[in-house]
Each structure stands twice: as structure tokens, then as C-alpha cells.
Length: 333
Image (cartoon, rainbow, N blue to C red; front, side):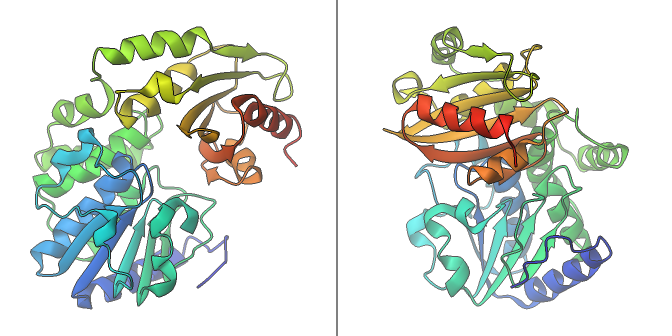
């Protein structure tokens, strides 16, 4: 498996061709999204999985945690391809990892990388160490869904609405409703809409629909939010903490969306939201406006991601996690 982090762009076509060779002859394929899958991870997996399923391949799509499929993503699985983590074979003949910036992002299913016959990595994270036998990693792509779409084109797939919907779900969320999208990506969106995607029907449940209890959770969490203007070289850090008590009775989607509100703070370059997974265990989301590379910060803290959106996991008290984050933001070397 290659560890070359600077594979030239010219190699992307060769990597795609290698992935096509693997998937064109495969008869049994397991597709894994990262833990706590979002629309890009699961939409990408389901789009490719549906195409392979239609070709007669035995397909299963899964992720390491949590036990339940996010409610907002269930309707993307039109062919019933999702299976619990317990049903993932111990040694898959072909394993495809999607939107996972590292083996660790596969959680308890990460051990399948060492037991699988062939591992194909499809991703867009600059921090990806290319842990597969075949690595199609395009860190210029705004979403892994774009990498998958290019692979589908190489496979000669005619795009229809169910597949296009999965791709669109990943694209609209990872680009923040196309605010971080290139002209070419807007053209891709037009192509997906032309295939029959109803943009509002896809985007609203993913981004603009929450149960009433969400408002009470936000009131508590945002009331405790803190702005520290002197952190990150004086550029500012705003942070909030979502405890298990805060999140009780709500879907993971509600907790994950908190950072999108915290990040709107005009006085801070960096936003952080600590989400309690279990006592003394945290998942931390980082966002930056433009000047701080939070992927570098996240990597120093054991995580990864993109320049303006990254994350890491940590243990200890919330204050201890924040202390380590402040120190790293102030001295990112």
C-alpha cells in the first residue's frame, strides 16, 4: 500500500483505471463509510453500491458506528444495501472505503483493511495516507461524491435519478449548499438535476429540518458558548460543548449541525464544537473561515480533515480538551 501523499494529479486517471479494473470483475463488494456517516460518505457508498448491485454483484454497505442509520439518509438506500456492522465479512474479497481520511475513521471495521483481498480507497481528504491497494484520492474535489461520479463515468454508467440523488446529497452538504463549489462543480450539479434530482426534496431533510427539541438543545448549548479573541494568534476561537445530557433524545444529525451555527460568529476565525460520545470521550469539529488550516491542527491532535473543516477525537474533561486545542492553535508546529 502506498504512502505517497503527493501523488501528482496526472496519476488520478491511472488510479481511476485501476479501480475500474477491480470493480469491473468483482462479484462481492463491501463498501464502508466512515463512522458517524454523513451524506457524502453514505451517499457516495450507496451510489456506487447501487450501480454494482444492478450489475449482479453481491453488495453490502455499512459503517462502524453508530448502530442505527442516520434517519436523514435512509431514503437514499433504494435497494436495501445497508447492513449492520456485525454483518460485514471478516475478510471481504473487495473492500471499498469511502470518505475515510484514515483507517481509524472506519472505527471498529478498520481491521477489515488488513484482511480484505483488495482495498480500494475513494476519498478527497488531503490528509489521507492512501491506505488501500488502489487509492483514488483527489484532494481538490469538494466531496468524495465527485470522486465516485468520476469513477461511475469511467465505468460507463448512465446516470439516473436514484444514483444522481445519492451523489447530490453528498455534494450539497459538503459544499455547504454550493458556497464552496467551483464552476465545474456547479456544472455537475446541473447534470444531477437534469437526471431528475429534486434539489429541495434532497436538501431540506439533510440541512433544514429538525425536531422541536433541537431548539431547546441549541438554547442550552449556545448559552454556554465562549468567544476567546486572543487564541489562534489573535484571530479568535469560538467554542461550544454538547454534553450527553444536551443531546438526549435527539438524532446525531442535530448534534452535528451545531458547528454550522457556532461558525457564524464574526469575531472568530476558528470554531470548535465538542460533542460528548460517552463520559470523558469527545468528538471535536473544527471550522475555519479562511486563514487557519484546521486540518493541520486536527492532525497534531490525532485527527484530520480539510483546510477549513476538520476534526479529532479526545479523552478527558471538556476543559482539558479545550486547553490542548488552544495550545495547538497558538503553536501549530
